[in-house]
Length: 144
Image (cartoon, rainbow, N blue to C red; front, side, top):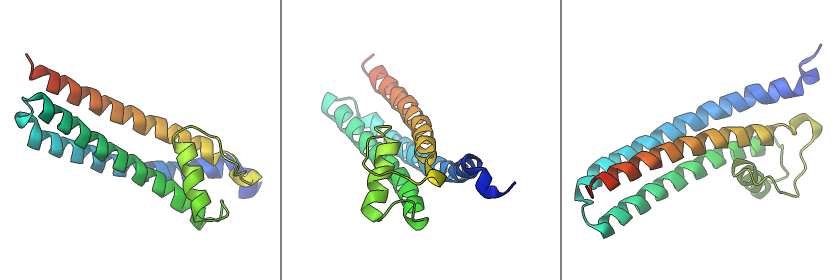
């Protein structure tokens, strides 16, 4: 049995490495959210300031998710899985957002990678959602 006989195992192992990178990026992003929140939440006693805190946090989260999309796009591009850089970014964005609709068809050897990126993204979106819920609860507690 050769390694080429186990394409999904190889894809899974590579996806595990990429997922580890995205977890590290996400950890940095969520630490940035915490730092931003701790810096501004005491000033968030006015409704406008609360809104600005939420806008800032959402911007940090969007930046974090885009950095994670870039990690996968770089992988697709460096391994020539997609035809060019723009296709790499587009395919990664479609897979990460779980939209899944692209005109890019991967070779047999790489077909499972998009689904694995989608699984990774669901975990990262879940993490972001949990952080956002905690921020929302803390901001709401200021009203009480």
